[in-house]
Image (cartoon, rainbow, N blue to C red; front, side, top):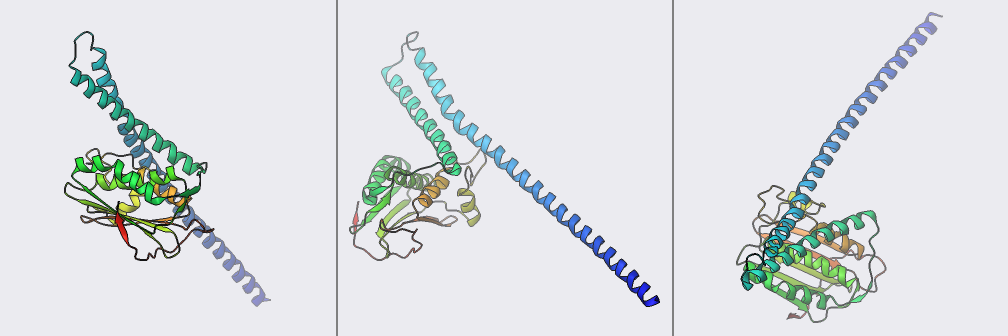
Length: 293
C-alpha cells in the first residue's frame, strides 16, 4: 500500500515537472517568436523607409528638372532666350521625362511580376539581333563614360523562345549597370554562345568596381541599393537586376552573378533551347567560332 502511494506521488511529481518544463519550453519559444517578429518588423520598416527615400529622390530629381527648365521656357516671350538655350532646356526636359518614365515603368514591372500577373509574348527570337540592338543603343553612353563595349557573338547561335521586348529589357538593364559601375578606361565584354543542350549563354563581363557576396545579394533584392546613402556615386532605383532576374526566370532560364570587389562583375544568363519543355539547368558551353558584332 505504501509503495503504491509513493508511486502515485512520484508519478504526480513527474507529471507536474513535465507540465512546468512544457510551460517553460512554450514560453521560451514564444519569446523567440516574439523577438523574431520584432526583428522582421524592424527590417521591414527599414526597407520601407529606404524605399520611400530612394523613390522620393528618384522621382523628385527629374521632376525638379522638368519644372525648373519649363519655367525658364515660359519666360521666353518676356525675355528672349537664345535658340541654343531653348534647345538645351528642351533637351534636358526630354531627358528628365524619359528618366521619370523609366523609373515609373520599373516600379510597375516589379509590382506586376511580384503579383504574378506578368505575361510573356513567347515566340522564336534571335538573341543575336537583340544583343546587337542593345549594344548599338549603348554606344553613345559607353563612349561618354570612356568605356569600351566588346560584343562577341557566335556564328552558330541558335534561335531561342521568348519575348523579344522583355529579353531586350533584361540585357538593357545588365549592360546599363555594367557601364554605370565601370570607371573610365574600362571594358565590357558581351559574349554569346551556344550551350551543349542547344540553348544560348550570354555572359556580360565588366572591369568595374565589383561587389562582395553580401552586396550581390542586396543588388538582387527589389529596391536594394549597394550604396543606399545619399552620396552614392551612381543613381538608380535598385530594380534593374531584380527585374532582369525575374524575367530570366519567367523564360525558364538561369542568371548567375560572379563578382570580385575592385576587379569587376560577370553576369551569366542561360536561356534554354527553344525545343525544351523544362527549364535547362546546365551552364556548360561549347567553344564556337565567333564574329564581332
